[in-house]
Image (cartoon, rainbow, N blue to C red; front, side, top):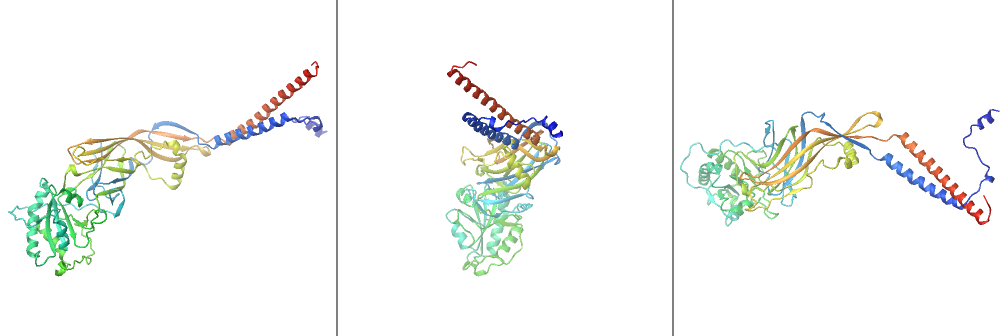
Length: 484
């Protein structure tokens, strides 16, 4: 009784198999319907798994305070690490010069290939005594050097200290009296003919341009200490010698020269020995640049206001010839914001197509200046407009921040100037931010669409089969001459 009542609400009443008829057209239509179902199901599954986003522009609601981090990795094939400086300034008056705590420099050759470990960790000592306070008449005590005799002198004396100078340079002229006086004193104490352990020389870089370029001289005056047997010149002009950054009065210079020869035996003109006994680090003596190039990498923190990151040759006790400074560079990285964690980096790779790839717009770009009369004194400026992009997801019915990224547009120009060439990165953070919201499709919506696909295709196929079958029956009846 109960079972018969339940059967009365059966929506899917069965027809005995003997009363059904299979046809060739029905079989073909069934195969087409099945393939159509599979195709539409695949399309629906792909749509369900795809990332769906909505984009809006809102006021910047940054949670990382008023500072913005800038990461960079830039290669300069013709700018020496000896004087390369990273400076930061902004419209609020902030002016930070020669940042060294978070900036690292590595010597590279003209092909951007590294030639050693980190160069000059820490700031260069500040020179307070640029010469003798009392000017006295001086007699030239140092030996003039040129391309013709430089190598012979450097191989003859265990220690050759050379002052690379320019007559027009103010600091070179301040140094000249004390340098010549020091050379005379050292010559009297260590006679070049009888003792032969040390010699002081000088090179006029306005006359010996090629010689100064060979030793990567970019600032004047530059005092280099060459030691016999340690100056390697075969590997693309690399040099293993020291630069002197100490005080420049006569007393300090003489004391420095004494330390250079203190551990060298008097017979050093027969056999040169390197001084390896003194393991202490003298801040006035640092390795000179092995090559003319420098790779500068690291990060700086700046305020979220328009400002500039400037990379240039800078020194408070040297002068520079603008025509000899070339700031051509290759940008390996220049990006804004925090570094991504492994998890966020994975999400970044997944969502990169939706971030438009502007997070490191300058990466891989090269900016070259040909050295010559026409292109001398060229400053390269980059204008960057920075916009924060924040991506959030609405999974689990709540808003979850996935990624914060700063994107920027870049416009670059080459500007001729009378001053020492520099590279400027002008940045301007936007007060607005782009909010990209990932809106995943619900599973119930996916199931509903799948059911609609299966039921719809099955129903339409049934209707087509019925129309096709009835049409064939009518055609057969007409052929047999029967009336409907």
